[in-house]
Image 1 (cartoon, protein in one colour):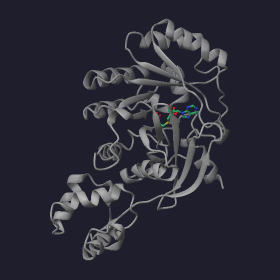
Image 2: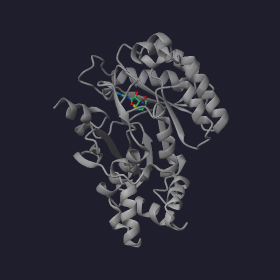
Image 3: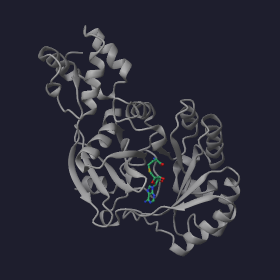
Image 4: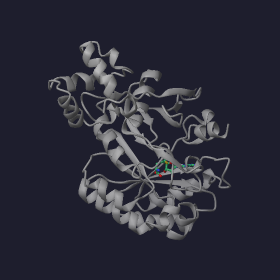
Length: 347
Ligand code: SAH
């Protein structure tokens, strides 16, 4: 493993894995915490780890790499301070993150894949398909470097950027364990939301980890006919299979699932859709987040009218369902994910 070309991505290692590697290099036990702490302070080279002997720093440099994205583009909303980053990764690929300033704390929305394999009809991230998974370190870097560059202390994370977290399952779990570490960024699981298009089997697998994060499921339709039209994944896991997995998730973790519903004009926003959705979710205690569709130039779909959104919401609240309508942040910078990367790829 000392070949330059074969160096291991140190920030993706879990702490016991790092400890094992260091011990195999003949290092004493306390080095692991020293090195781990440096990594999460944002060093870009082993030379900056000034309390390590020079010989060790050289050895580490031969064995490991430290990832660090470059800012390819940054936009700051003049209206609400939302900051959007387009990152250039070490292999020249691009991903996006958005920092949103909420009253309950600054929240970063991170990407987990370069592109996305899921093919949702309304989503900019999936247009060129999936290029590759992000390493855990590359997901973490988005939190760390967004915080460092913006000067905004990040207290919450949403995995709602480019990609499908449960499709990149192992790296997502690694990311969650690392970002939660008290010697690292120390962000509590209750401050993290993970959004999925509804890979039912993976929802069950995630439930097995019994993490206290919030699971958000992109439902977008209450019936298979509508959902399959806009989300190809529905042909593998239909609405009822997804809702059953959500029930099992709640039973196992005690955490209520939240549903995202992008309101698309004349597609999923009729009174019939509202009633069926209300019927399926009544009594579950689940939360529904209605999202006025963001316009994606490549897609013919358009957002529901504000009046339709209001009526839809009324049907749900009438059945005792907890509903919010997502406020649009950074409207002047196209803050919805996937659009900056698309623009860059088109060039
Ligand atoms: N793959 C995951 C997370 C990424 S997308 C998922 O599917 O949940 C984050 C959220 O944005 C999802 O709910 C997704 O359906 C939604 N979304 C994607 N494109 C959108 C658009 N044009 N308008 C509104 N919401 C959109």
